[in-house]
Image (cartoon, rainbow, N blue to C red; front, side):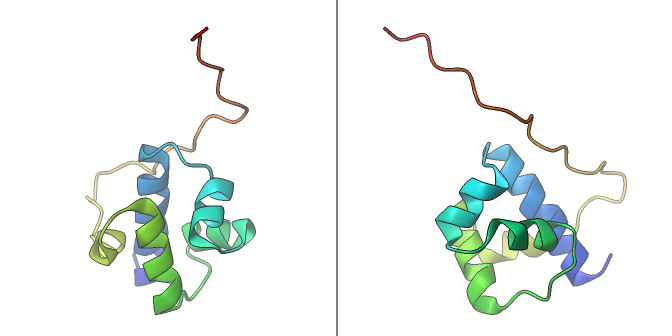
Length: 90
């Protein structure tokens, strides 16, 4: 895996673990949602400023975006599509 693929893998993994959509992450990082998708697919050369914005939005150190995934790890699963159910609080 090259650095772009590693970053994309970790970005998706961290985003999904936090229950964030690409749209919400993009909003928090102040970047375009489509750009987040391209980064996750390893299609973009991301600037340091964007890497910092993504790490800040995910509340992780920048280094977390570059940790080598386990060779046997399966691709991070996407979030379920659709709206989350409303809480049952009354």
